[in-house]
Length: 116
Image (cartoon, rainbow, N blue to C red; front, side):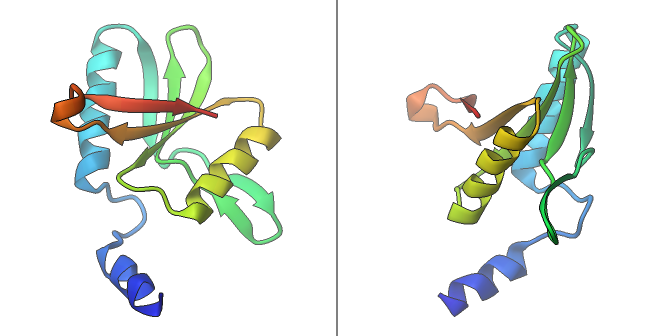
């Protein structure tokens, strides 16, 4: 377990820097913006307080053409604490929380979407 934590820490990027999956999703959001589906998006644009000294920062804040605000979390694999945080945030705040994962090519490619 400690070794897994060390490996995760080594692969973590600094705040404000996207990994490859997040960058690919940003390109998807940019296409949606160009198509008029999305008005605005910002990487790490929102931070939610869940409890004392406990915060959740989704990968993207997204404003749809309708004016609705969403929080998008891009994941390769889910860790239990990340899934718990998005569920808690969805219960506490009146906006749509969406998890996005790369869908394998054998499953059609694109993005798998889960709403909270």
